[in-house]
Structures are given as C-alpha cells and as structure tokens.
Image 1 (tube, one colour):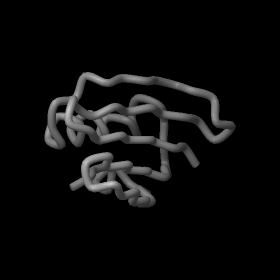
Image 2 (image 1 turned 135 degrees about the vertical axis):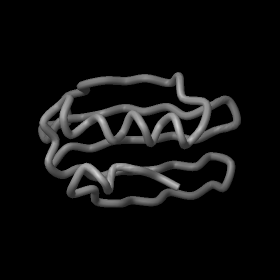
Image 3 (image 1 turned 90 degrees about the vertical axis):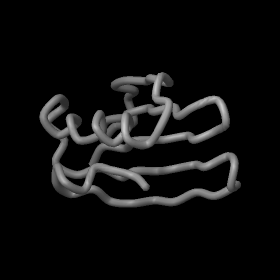
Image 4 (image 1 turned 120 degrees about the horizontal axis):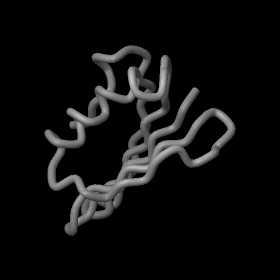
Length: 79
C-alpha cells in the first residue's frame, strides 16, 4: 500500500508520495486548492501503478489529521 501525505496550510498544499517501503517517490508543494490536488491524485493509480493507498491529510489551519484508504481511481480525492 502506498502512502500519500498531504499538508494543508495557509500558504498552499504540499503532497508527498511514498511507496510501500516508505521510499519517497515524489514531493510537490505547488497546489493552490483542493480541485487541483484532486485532479492530480486521480492520476496516481496510472502513473505509479497504485492499487491502494493511505491518504493522510494534515490540516494545519484546523489542527486536525484525517486518514482515508483509497482503493480505486475514483476514491483518490480529498474534501
């Protein structure tokens, strides 16, 4: 299972993607909103052959952490 760590803050959204051995596959912080990030997240299953992923969303503004399991292409999104 791959892991996608998403950090939301006032300055934007950071995304880091790890493989099942916790090796960093990609790190990017250029997302301004959820729509742009969600579009990119839905490309992950094809780009990295991801079948299942743990999405960890840390919202610094709300001081909260949410975790979701994405198990198909349509479930790779955050709200």
